[in-house]
Amino acid sequence: MAQNIAVKVDDLTVAYNYKPVLWDIDLEIPEGVLMAIVGPNGAGKSTLIKAILGILPPIAGSVTIYGKPYKKQRALVAYVPQKGSVDWDFPTTALDVVMMGTYGSLGWIKRPRQKEKKAALEALEKVGMLAFKNRQISQLSGGQQQRIFLARALVQNASIYFMDEPFQGVDATTEIAIINILKELRKAGKTVIVVHHDLQTVPEYFDWVTFLNVKKIATGPVKDIFNDDNLTKTYGINYKVSIQE
Amino acid sequence: MNSAQIEIQLIASLVAIACAIPGTFLVLRKMAMISDAISHAILPGLVIGFFITQDLNSPLLILLAALSGLITVVLVEQIQQTGLVKEDTAIGLVFPALFSIGVILIAKNANDVHLDVDAVLLGELAFAPFDRLIISGTDVGPKSLWVIGSILTVTLGLLFAFFKELKVSTFDAGLSASLGFSPVIIHYGLMSVASITTVGAFDAVGAILVVALMIAPAATAYLLTTDLKKMLLLAVFFGVLSAISGYWMAHILDASIAGSITTMLGFIFLMAYLFAPSKGVIAVIYREKQQRTEVSLITFLLHLKNHSEKSERHVNHLCEHINWQKVRAKTVLDLAQQNNMIIIDNNIVSLTDKGDAFTTQAIDYIITNEDAQIEDMKDDFFLFRG
Ligand SMILES: Nc1ncnc2c1ncn2[C@@H]1O[C@H](COP(=O)(O)OP(=O)(O)OP(=O)(O)O)[C@@H](O)[C@H]1O
Ligand SMILES: [Mg+2]
Image (cartoon, rainbow over all chains, first blue to last red; front, side):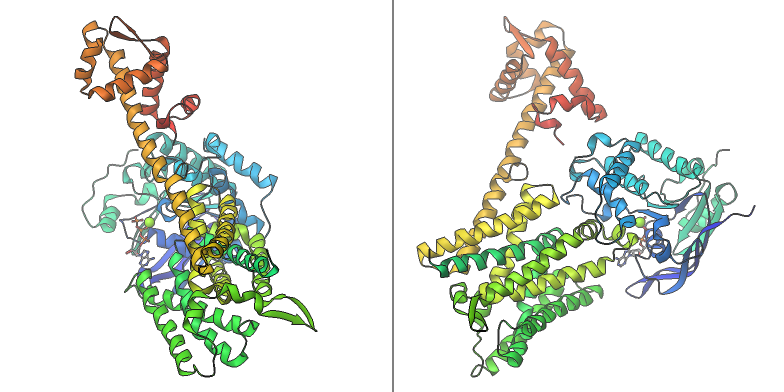
């Protein structure tokens, strides 16, 4: 099965203040997978995504998106940061945050217009948040904030989506709503990469998985590599997860 | 008003506007302290620039001084990046060092430099109109007016051009970087504007007032709005309001203009802090009290709904059953009656249809946290507003 490689990471080492937190990562993510990145707190999951997106400069190694450096492929990529990484007291509305997703295609200086606003409203509708469009973002619940972030990524209309813990602090209903949207994206041929903490749901939600803990432990189809052996290697304690067929 | 008075107010207002714009973003980036650092650390650049140009309003001097402001920012970040100290400590390490270099430079050359530390810190707005800009023999106005006017024009131009970039990088630096708007470039752009504004303004109003004009109006505006554009407009408005009212306060009291403007800034902030409609102290206290009453009301209504037996619904028993003090019970009873939610017949309390429907709805809301159902109740009850 010859598949396109959407994201290729070669020998990537990333450091904060010269202290490496990711060592020598090699990773190939095929086009069209819905992939979970799993690993304990501090494993470097967020760091890996930030390095792929050029937010953090690597001290060694390279990243390509469909064979070209990220800088040339920005338009193909959407990013949902970890929710805690922004100031939710910032004076802005839900609609405005979603509009930010359109800024990339606008480029410097140009302002969003009717077309961008329409796209943002559609994305809000898709995540079931249209009624909240004029709410100040601090007055949204955690799950609603997460939906806003998802809408912002949807509006980017990308080919590859990186999401850092989109299920953090959301209830079961929202989780199902989000995963359905992600599955829809995959059906549309998009590649979706999700940092995920709930190991129980990995086989149900995802078809591809990467185990990460400072180094890459394993990567591949969930049905082949999501097993106790890799879990133990990643989390350091004996894991017994029964994978339902 | 004579023309000098008008000119002073005009200069003060332009300074206020030029400061409020970068100030708003500094406040949102939680970087208020850095403006303090910049305002002090420009001193060495200023003194060196003055040795070279002998003119406090020369563009070269402004650039040199702004550069030492930027050096401060870089140094602070470098020290912070070692991970050994926090940002405020780094700021505290850098700017006194740079400031004292400036002070020593002045002291060493006190004889041939007409520049003193007091003037740098406090400025003297009252003298600004006397330093005129003469172009080929014609007096075109005070120099500081031209300096700050040019800086303001550039700042406004940058704000209009890069508003969306400033917004996204302030709110979410990660997204901004991934979209290709380098937060580093935007950060240094903002710092340059803050430095140049500080230098351009300090001559007229002094370093302390510059800091106050950057931070106080933005902090006041932050309490009053949840919209970035409105916050900018309000910050500008409060800056100008303080500048003009401060000027007249100084005039009446025969006090320092810079000091009076700073006082007005503090006063206006205090007013907003106390009386802002949703974030103010009084509004918060009022809302909490209101919420307590409403929770009590719903508890009370729920009790009525759950108990059909008369003994549980007798006015006198209610107090005991729900375990409230008399005053609280009376407040709740009155509130429920005013809203036609209960009727009291022979001291027996029962729910009206409206009360019954309300209780069901309220409990539904509390359980599901679904918004749509209670949109129409929001105006009457605090509990349901965000
Ligand atoms: N800005 C920073 N400066 C210094 N060290 C950092 C910084 N951000 C993260 N680290 C360190 O890098 C390591 C990896 O962090 P990262 O945020 O990538 O972990 P993670 O796998 O996303 O964890 P979590 O599950 O908690 O989100 C951690 O040891 C963390 O302490
Ligand atoms: Mg993380």
